[in-house]
Length: 79
Image 1 (spheres, rainbow, N blue to C red):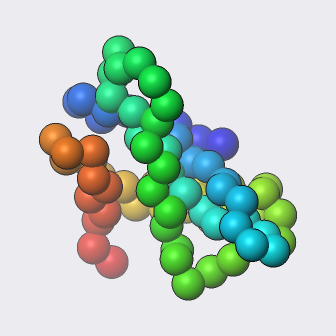
Image 2: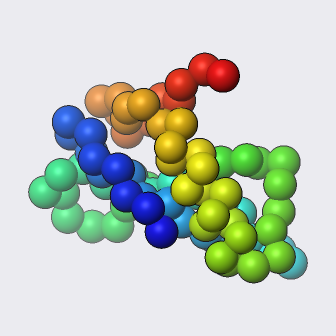
């Protein structure tokens, strides 16, 4: 698991269960906000056999994350 902080939000790598495996995801929550974070699935075309491998892929995507906009949407660096 990896974590990255931005001006209004923090983002954390995650794995979410899907049929027959796991998806890589990034969970986003506002600083000081209550409740559950919003999960954004990333690498939608990939399914992972283990939660660990999905989280490792999410960590790589988190490294590309440059910001979270005011609506909580992810903004990635262009390759």
